[in-house]
Amino acid sequence: MYQFEHPFYFYLLLSIPVVIFLSILVWLWKKNVQKRFIDKPFLNSLSPNRSTFKPALKTVVLCLAFALLSIALANPKIGTKLETVKREGVDIVFALDVSKSMLAEDIAPNRLDKSKQIITQIINTLTGDRVGIIGYAGSAFPQVPITTDFSAVRLFLSGMNTDMVSSEGTAIVEAIRLSKSYFDDTNQKNKILFLVSDGEDHEGNISEIAKEAASEGIRIYPIGVGTREGGPIPIRRNGILQHYLRDRNNEQVISRLGEETLKQIADITKGEYLDGANTQAVVDRVKSILGGMDKDEFETLEFTDFEDQFQWFLGGALFLLVIDVFLLERKTAWIERLNLFNERRRKRKNNF
Image (cartoon, rainbow, N blue to C red; front, side):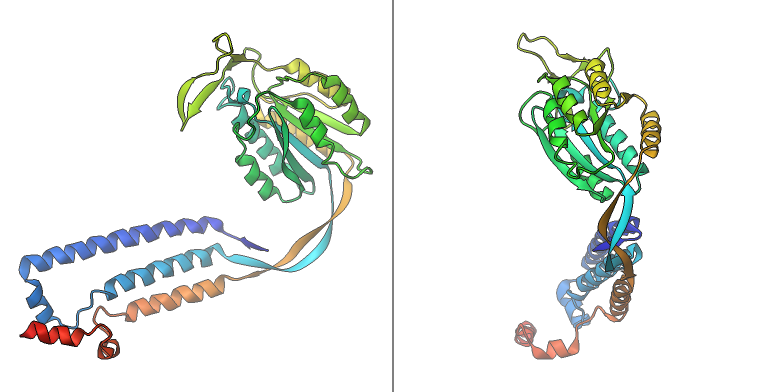
Protein backbone atom coordinates (compact mmCIF):
# COMPACT_ATOMS: atom_id res chain seq x y z
CA MET A 1 0.00 0.00 0.00
CA TYR A 2 1.38 3.40 -0.93
CA GLN A 3 0.15 6.96 -0.82
CA PHE A 4 1.38 10.47 -1.57
CA GLU A 5 1.41 13.06 1.19
CA HIS A 6 1.48 16.12 -1.09
CA PRO A 7 0.21 15.05 -4.55
CA PHE A 8 -0.17 18.67 -5.74
CA TYR A 9 3.60 18.79 -6.27
CA PHE A 10 3.07 16.64 -9.35
CA TYR A 11 2.19 19.90 -11.10
CA LEU A 12 5.97 20.47 -11.24
CA LEU A 13 6.02 17.83 -13.99
CA LEU A 14 4.61 20.55 -16.25
CA SER A 15 8.07 22.12 -16.18
CA ILE A 16 9.46 19.21 -18.24
CA PRO A 17 7.75 20.21 -21.54
CA VAL A 18 8.89 23.80 -20.88
CA VAL A 19 12.51 22.67 -20.48
CA ILE A 20 12.31 20.61 -23.69
CA PHE A 21 10.75 23.52 -25.59
CA LEU A 22 13.41 25.99 -24.39
CA SER A 23 16.20 23.53 -25.25
CA ILE A 24 14.88 23.19 -28.79
CA LEU A 25 14.67 26.98 -29.12
CA VAL A 26 18.28 27.39 -27.91
CA TRP A 27 19.45 24.66 -30.32
CA LEU A 28 17.70 26.34 -33.28
CA TRP A 29 19.13 29.72 -32.28
CA LYS A 30 22.66 28.31 -32.18
CA LYS A 31 22.23 26.67 -35.56
CA ASN A 32 21.05 29.94 -37.14
CA VAL A 33 23.91 31.95 -35.62
CA GLN A 34 26.49 29.38 -36.77
CA LYS A 35 25.12 29.38 -40.32
CA ARG A 36 25.24 33.17 -40.38
CA PHE A 37 28.92 33.45 -39.43
CA ILE A 38 30.66 30.23 -40.49
CA ASP A 39 30.23 27.21 -42.75
CA LYS A 40 29.83 23.78 -41.21
CA PRO A 41 33.22 22.34 -42.47
CA PHE A 42 35.10 25.28 -40.94
CA LEU A 43 33.12 24.96 -37.72
CA ASN A 44 34.10 21.29 -37.47
CA SER A 45 37.74 22.24 -38.03
CA LEU A 46 37.68 24.97 -35.37
CA SER A 47 35.88 22.84 -32.77
CA PRO A 48 36.56 19.18 -33.58
CA ASN A 49 35.65 18.08 -30.07
CA ARG A 50 32.17 19.61 -30.18
CA SER A 51 29.51 16.96 -29.47
CA THR A 52 26.09 17.04 -31.11
CA PHE A 53 24.77 14.35 -28.75
CA LYS A 54 25.75 15.83 -25.37
CA PRO A 55 23.31 18.82 -25.41
CA ALA A 56 20.36 16.46 -25.95
CA LEU A 57 21.68 14.17 -23.21
CA LYS A 58 21.93 17.11 -20.79
CA THR A 59 18.29 18.00 -21.50
CA VAL A 60 17.16 14.41 -20.84
CA VAL A 61 19.14 14.29 -17.58
CA LEU A 62 17.65 17.61 -16.46
CA CYS A 63 14.10 16.45 -17.23
CA LEU A 64 14.63 13.22 -15.29
CA ALA A 65 15.95 15.26 -12.36
CA PHE A 66 12.81 17.44 -12.38
CA ALA A 67 10.59 14.33 -12.50
CA LEU A 68 12.35 12.74 -9.52
CA LEU A 69 12.27 16.03 -7.63
CA SER A 70 8.49 16.36 -8.08
CA ILE A 71 7.99 12.80 -6.80
CA ALA A 72 10.24 13.53 -3.81
CA LEU A 73 8.24 16.66 -2.93
CA ALA A 74 4.99 14.65 -3.20
CA ASN A 75 6.54 12.39 -0.52
CA PRO A 76 5.50 8.83 -1.45
CA LYS A 77 4.83 6.62 1.57
CA ILE A 78 4.68 2.84 1.76
CA GLY A 79 2.51 1.03 4.30
CA THR A 80 4.61 -1.18 6.54
CA LYS A 81 2.18 -2.38 9.20
CA LEU A 82 -1.19 -4.00 8.54
CA GLU A 83 -3.51 -4.21 11.53
CA THR A 84 -7.10 -5.14 12.24
CA VAL A 85 -8.85 -1.94 13.28
CA LYS A 86 -12.25 -1.79 14.95
CA ARG A 87 -14.51 0.95 13.66
CA GLU A 88 -18.02 2.13 14.43
CA GLY A 89 -20.34 3.37 11.77
CA VAL A 90 -23.35 2.84 9.55
CA ASP A 91 -23.54 0.94 6.27
CA ILE A 92 -24.72 3.39 3.62
CA VAL A 93 -25.64 2.60 0.02
CA PHE A 94 -26.20 5.29 -2.63
CA ALA A 95 -28.41 4.32 -5.57
CA LEU A 96 -27.75 6.86 -8.32
CA ASP A 97 -30.15 7.30 -11.23
CA VAL A 98 -28.15 7.44 -14.51
CA SER A 99 -31.09 7.46 -16.91
CA LYS A 100 -31.31 10.00 -19.77
CA SER A 101 -33.78 12.10 -17.80
CA MET A 102 -30.94 12.98 -15.41
CA LEU A 103 -29.42 15.09 -18.20
CA ALA A 104 -32.23 17.64 -17.83
CA GLU A 105 -30.87 21.06 -16.89
CA ASP A 106 -33.79 22.32 -14.82
CA ILE A 107 -31.32 22.25 -11.92
CA ALA A 108 -27.76 23.45 -12.54
CA PRO A 109 -25.55 22.20 -14.07
CA ASN A 110 -27.80 19.19 -14.69
CA ARG A 111 -29.51 16.59 -12.53
CA LEU A 112 -26.74 13.99 -12.79
CA ASP A 113 -23.89 16.36 -11.94
CA LYS A 114 -25.95 17.81 -9.11
CA SER A 115 -26.53 14.29 -7.76
CA LYS A 116 -22.80 13.50 -7.88
CA GLN A 117 -22.10 16.73 -6.05
CA ILE A 118 -24.56 15.85 -3.29
CA ILE A 119 -23.18 12.31 -2.85
CA THR A 120 -19.58 13.55 -2.81
CA GLN A 121 -20.37 16.17 -0.16
CA ILE A 122 -22.12 13.57 2.00
CA ILE A 123 -19.17 11.17 1.71
CA ASN A 124 -16.80 13.98 2.75
CA THR A 125 -18.63 14.24 6.09
CA LEU A 126 -18.40 10.50 6.89
CA THR A 127 -15.77 9.02 9.19
CA GLY A 128 -16.19 5.42 10.39
CA ASP A 129 -19.00 4.43 8.04
CA ARG A 130 -18.96 2.05 5.09
CA VAL A 131 -20.24 3.13 1.68
CA GLY A 132 -21.41 1.41 -1.50
CA ILE A 133 -22.81 2.70 -4.80
CA ILE A 134 -25.42 1.30 -7.17
CA GLY A 135 -26.19 2.72 -10.60
CA TYR A 136 -29.47 2.20 -12.36
CA ALA A 137 -31.47 3.22 -15.42
CA GLY A 138 -33.38 0.55 -17.37
CA SER A 139 -31.61 -1.94 -15.09
CA ALA A 140 -29.53 -1.75 -11.93
CA PHE A 141 -25.85 -2.63 -11.55
CA PRO A 142 -23.34 -2.62 -8.67
CA GLN A 143 -20.81 0.19 -9.11
CA VAL A 144 -18.87 0.06 -5.83
CA PRO A 145 -19.22 -2.71 -3.20
CA ILE A 146 -19.55 -1.72 0.45
CA THR A 147 -16.17 -0.33 1.52
CA THR A 148 -14.35 2.11 3.80
CA ASP A 149 -12.16 3.35 0.94
CA PHE A 150 -13.82 6.69 0.32
CA SER A 151 -11.19 7.72 -2.25
CA ALA A 152 -12.12 4.75 -4.44
CA VAL A 153 -15.82 5.52 -4.01
CA ARG A 154 -15.31 9.14 -5.13
CA LEU A 155 -13.23 7.98 -8.09
CA PHE A 156 -15.85 5.54 -9.38
CA LEU A 157 -18.64 8.02 -8.68
CA SER A 158 -17.01 10.67 -10.86
CA GLY A 159 -16.98 8.28 -13.82
CA MET A 160 -20.69 7.44 -13.73
CA ASN A 161 -22.70 8.67 -16.73
CA THR A 162 -25.89 8.02 -18.71
CA ASP A 163 -24.11 5.71 -21.19
CA MET A 164 -23.42 3.04 -18.57
CA VAL A 165 -26.77 1.29 -19.17
CA SER A 166 -27.95 0.62 -22.71
CA SER A 167 -31.59 -0.04 -21.78
CA GLU A 168 -33.79 3.03 -21.36
CA GLY A 169 -35.99 3.67 -18.35
CA THR A 170 -35.69 4.12 -14.61
CA ALA A 171 -35.72 0.84 -12.69
CA ILE A 172 -36.11 2.01 -9.09
CA VAL A 173 -37.49 -1.41 -8.13
CA GLU A 174 -34.32 -3.16 -9.36
CA ALA A 175 -32.11 -0.65 -7.58
CA ILE A 176 -33.85 -1.28 -4.24
CA ARG A 177 -33.75 -5.03 -4.79
CA LEU A 178 -30.02 -4.93 -5.56
CA SER A 179 -29.33 -2.80 -2.48
CA LYS A 180 -30.54 -5.66 -0.26
CA SER A 181 -27.51 -7.73 -1.28
CA TYR A 182 -25.20 -4.95 -0.04
CA PHE A 183 -26.39 -5.38 3.55
CA ASP A 184 -25.02 -8.85 4.19
CA ASP A 185 -25.08 -8.76 8.01
CA THR A 186 -28.46 -9.67 9.50
CA ASN A 187 -27.42 -8.17 12.85
CA GLN A 188 -26.82 -4.69 11.46
CA LYS A 189 -28.65 -2.06 13.49
CA ASN A 190 -29.08 0.41 10.63
CA LYS A 191 -29.24 -0.19 6.89
CA ILE A 192 -29.44 3.07 5.01
CA LEU A 193 -30.20 3.54 1.31
CA PHE A 194 -30.03 7.00 -0.25
CA LEU A 195 -32.02 6.88 -3.48
CA VAL A 196 -30.79 9.81 -5.59
CA SER A 197 -33.22 10.28 -8.47
CA ASP A 198 -35.66 12.53 -10.28
CA GLY A 199 -38.42 10.14 -9.25
CA GLU A 200 -39.41 8.87 -12.68
CA ASP A 201 -40.21 5.15 -12.58
CA HIS A 202 -41.11 2.92 -15.50
CA GLU A 203 -41.62 -0.38 -13.69
CA GLY A 204 -44.29 0.10 -11.04
CA ASN A 205 -44.68 -2.12 -7.96
CA ILE A 206 -42.85 0.52 -5.92
CA SER A 207 -44.91 -0.11 -2.79
CA GLU A 208 -44.23 -3.87 -2.84
CA ILE A 209 -40.44 -3.59 -3.10
CA ALA A 210 -40.45 -0.79 -0.51
CA LYS A 211 -42.33 -3.03 1.92
CA GLU A 212 -39.81 -5.84 1.31
CA ALA A 213 -36.96 -3.46 2.06
CA ALA A 214 -38.67 -2.21 5.20
CA SER A 215 -39.25 -5.78 6.43
CA GLU A 216 -35.48 -6.36 6.17
CA GLY A 217 -34.72 -3.22 8.16
CA ILE A 218 -33.65 -1.03 5.25
CA ARG A 219 -34.57 2.63 5.63
CA ILE A 220 -34.69 4.54 2.35
CA TYR A 221 -34.00 8.27 2.17
CA PRO A 222 -34.88 9.44 -1.35
CA ILE A 223 -33.13 12.60 -2.54
CA GLY A 224 -35.17 14.29 -5.27
CA VAL A 225 -33.13 16.07 -7.93
CA GLY A 226 -35.03 18.25 -10.38
CA THR A 227 -38.02 20.61 -10.41
CA ARG A 228 -41.78 20.12 -10.65
CA GLU A 229 -41.82 22.28 -13.80
CA GLY A 230 -39.20 20.02 -15.33
CA GLY A 231 -37.17 20.60 -18.46
CA PRO A 232 -36.24 19.08 -21.82
CA ILE A 233 -33.54 16.42 -22.08
CA PRO A 234 -30.55 17.62 -24.15
CA ILE A 235 -28.63 15.12 -26.27
CA ARG A 236 -25.00 16.15 -26.71
CA ARG A 237 -22.10 14.77 -28.69
CA ASN A 238 -18.59 15.78 -27.65
CA GLY A 239 -20.13 18.47 -25.48
CA ILE A 240 -22.08 20.04 -28.38
CA LEU A 241 -25.88 20.13 -28.24
CA GLN A 242 -27.36 18.05 -31.06
CA HIS A 243 -31.08 18.09 -30.23
CA TYR A 244 -33.59 17.57 -27.44
CA LEU A 245 -35.06 14.13 -26.77
CA ARG A 246 -38.42 13.49 -28.46
CA ASP A 247 -41.02 10.76 -28.04
CA ARG A 248 -42.60 8.49 -30.66
CA ASN A 249 -44.99 11.26 -31.67
CA ASN A 250 -41.99 13.55 -32.31
CA GLU A 251 -42.95 15.76 -29.39
CA GLN A 252 -40.30 17.17 -27.11
CA VAL A 253 -40.01 15.18 -23.87
CA ILE A 254 -40.32 17.22 -20.68
CA SER A 255 -38.98 15.41 -17.61
CA ARG A 256 -40.45 16.46 -14.26
CA LEU A 257 -39.51 15.62 -10.69
CA GLY A 258 -41.70 12.78 -9.39
CA GLU A 259 -41.83 13.69 -5.71
CA GLU A 260 -44.90 11.56 -5.04
CA THR A 261 -43.08 8.33 -5.87
CA LEU A 262 -40.06 9.25 -3.75
CA LYS A 263 -42.17 10.36 -0.79
CA GLN A 264 -44.14 7.10 -0.97
CA ILE A 265 -40.91 5.10 -0.71
CA ALA A 266 -39.77 7.18 2.25
CA ASP A 267 -43.07 6.74 4.10
CA ILE A 268 -43.17 2.96 3.67
CA THR A 269 -39.56 2.42 4.81
CA LYS A 270 -39.74 4.99 7.65
CA GLY A 271 -37.17 7.15 5.94
CA GLU A 272 -37.40 10.79 4.93
CA TYR A 273 -37.70 12.57 1.60
CA LEU A 274 -34.96 15.17 0.98
CA ASP A 275 -35.17 17.95 -1.59
CA GLY A 276 -31.89 18.00 -3.51
CA ALA A 277 -32.19 21.61 -4.68
CA ASN A 278 -29.90 22.85 -1.90
CA THR A 279 -26.78 20.71 -1.57
CA GLN A 280 -25.66 22.08 1.78
CA ALA A 281 -29.14 21.68 3.29
CA VAL A 282 -29.20 18.02 2.22
CA VAL A 283 -25.71 17.39 3.59
CA ASP A 284 -26.57 18.98 6.93
CA ARG A 285 -29.78 16.98 7.23
CA VAL A 286 -28.02 13.71 6.33
CA LYS A 287 -25.34 14.46 8.90
CA SER A 288 -28.01 14.99 11.52
CA ILE A 289 -29.84 11.78 10.58
CA LEU A 290 -26.71 9.63 10.69
CA GLY A 291 -25.51 11.26 13.90
CA GLY A 292 -28.63 10.12 15.73
CA MET A 293 -28.28 6.48 14.72
CA ASP A 294 -26.72 3.63 16.67
CA LYS A 295 -23.38 2.59 15.21
CA ASP A 296 -22.36 -0.94 14.30
CA GLU A 297 -18.87 -2.12 15.22
CA PHE A 298 -16.92 -3.88 12.51
CA GLU A 299 -13.34 -4.87 11.85
CA THR A 300 -11.24 -3.83 8.87
CA LEU A 301 -7.65 -4.42 7.81
CA GLU A 302 -5.79 -1.13 7.51
CA PHE A 303 -2.21 0.04 7.17
CA THR A 304 -1.42 1.93 10.38
CA ASP A 305 2.25 2.80 9.76
CA PHE A 306 3.69 4.46 6.67
CA GLU A 307 7.35 5.14 5.98
CA ASP A 308 8.56 8.12 3.92
CA GLN A 309 10.30 7.22 0.67
CA PHE A 310 11.10 10.73 -0.61
CA GLN A 311 14.81 10.40 0.17
CA TRP A 312 15.40 7.90 -2.65
CA PHE A 313 13.88 10.19 -5.26
CA LEU A 314 15.57 13.29 -3.81
CA GLY A 315 18.93 11.50 -3.89
CA GLY A 316 18.37 10.48 -7.48
CA ALA A 317 17.40 14.05 -8.47
CA LEU A 318 20.53 15.52 -6.81
CA PHE A 319 22.71 12.87 -8.46
CA LEU A 320 21.32 13.72 -11.90
CA LEU A 321 21.78 17.47 -11.29
CA VAL A 322 25.44 16.88 -10.39
CA ILE A 323 25.87 14.81 -13.56
CA ASP A 324 24.26 17.62 -15.57
CA VAL A 325 26.76 20.14 -14.17
CA PHE A 326 29.81 18.02 -15.03
CA LEU A 327 28.41 16.82 -18.34
CA LEU A 328 30.33 19.00 -20.81
CA GLU A 329 29.21 19.64 -24.38
CA ARG A 330 32.37 18.21 -25.88
CA LYS A 331 33.11 14.68 -27.00
CA THR A 332 34.21 12.16 -24.41
CA ALA A 333 37.82 11.18 -25.10
CA TRP A 334 37.64 7.52 -24.12
CA ILE A 335 34.49 6.96 -26.18
CA GLU A 336 36.14 8.62 -29.16
CA ARG A 337 39.15 6.31 -28.79
CA LEU A 338 36.85 3.30 -29.08
CA ASN A 339 36.04 4.46 -32.64
CA LEU A 340 32.63 2.72 -32.48
CA PHE A 341 31.29 4.25 -35.67
CA ASN A 342 34.59 4.42 -37.63
CA GLU A 343 34.83 8.19 -37.19
CA ARG A 344 38.61 8.33 -37.74
CA ARG A 345 38.36 6.86 -41.21
CA ARG A 346 35.70 9.40 -42.16
CA LYS A 347 37.88 12.19 -40.80
CA ARG A 348 40.82 11.08 -42.96
CA LYS A 349 38.58 11.02 -46.02
CA ASN A 350 37.35 14.50 -45.28
CA ASN A 351 40.90 15.76 -45.01
CA PHE A 352 41.82 14.64 -48.56
